[in-house]
Image (cartoon, rainbow, N blue to C red; front, top):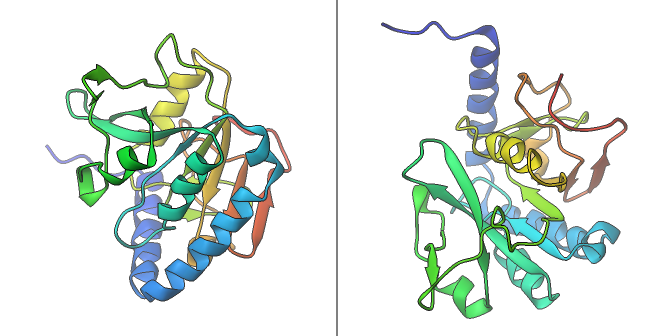
Length: 221
């Protein structure tokens, strides 16, 4: 039996399709230029200097802010770095695992959608994950997405990985600062459609500046 999509799902799908078409037209050199500007803003920000543990996504080959230099700089700044790993044993689940060195980062294998992912083990031992009892609280999550608006709403790729992880994490730990990284073409003047379980960001960092929250953030009521 075919499920009829809700209005919300249809609106999300339409916006996602529109933005993805826009992203395909951006020259790689322009993505790199914007990514460098975004990286510089993150590294010079007070919230970054204060944090001790950071999760940052490893970017897809095309169509989003390139985090290659950013993750290297995070490690160089002495922060504890975690990156996403999709759990293939549990549908639509994602966790963050620690990266221990630049060599470790450089040698990560390609996983889902051509994105590099850590294996669960490193040098014969189990990698630290952010939900482990021995792990310190996560201070900052640098979040990808397809589209963002100026009220800090986020449209993801439709799998729900980040919204689900944030909900699970904050049920057990303090909420980390949620900072989205966005190309100019991903920041819209209209509104991103949001559902009950979608999380707003605390700020969106683009190449031309930082869009800040003007209200409390969290899962929509």
